[in-house]
Length: 97
Image 1 (spheres, rainbow, N blue to C red):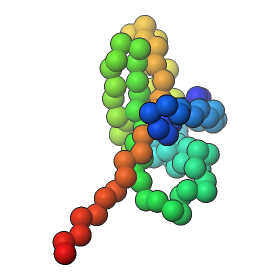
Image 2: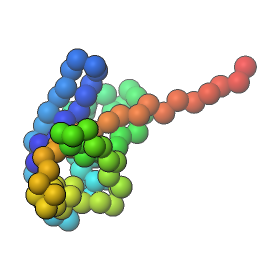
Image 3: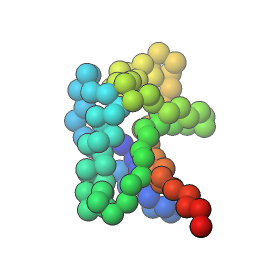
Image 4: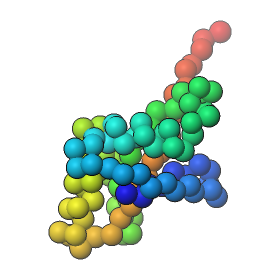
């Protein structure tokens, strides 16, 4: 399966990984983080989510227990085209001084 990661406004990375029908979004996210940013894992602590994005602009965040391959296989029922997008959300900590 092909996955996308938007690193900045102008830079979109793509990776293909083999995904089984039993693999959860949580497991896929872990594999994708290793593929996209193995060197940055120790430097930052972002939280990642996996989104399905469709041509008509519809977006939906997958739950950690959802199975991306099964989600993708169901796209044909609604005659939809889509892609999966990995998004990083930086965890910020507020510090009172």
